[in-house]
Image 1 (cartoon, rainbow, N blue to C red):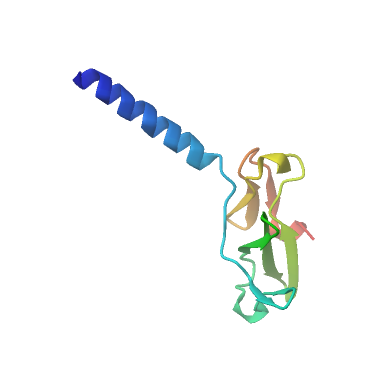
Image 2: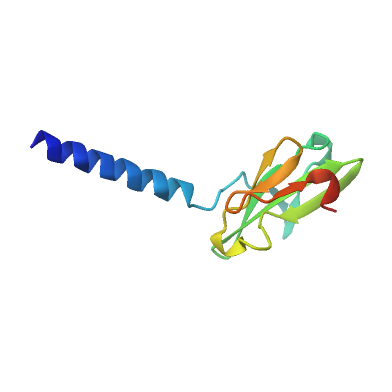
Length: 111
């Protein structure tokens, strides 16, 4: 009986882990003024992307905004190759890296 509950626990843990790794990330919601999305450019750290998730008609639209050399740039949080998986990017050492295929894009080159 004890062995069955241990196997059940391990199976549950593995399923929970796999489910949590395969979900679309959800970030803080950007400020909205009317139908406009507003991001405070003054709060952006140079070279560090800030990720947001905008909710629109039941859909989640994730994007990131970055201050690069005084220019404010925004991009969808979606790899051109892996976007159907909806895993987006993570920031790592000056680059955004796809959470699915691990392709790396240096922030200084993504404009």
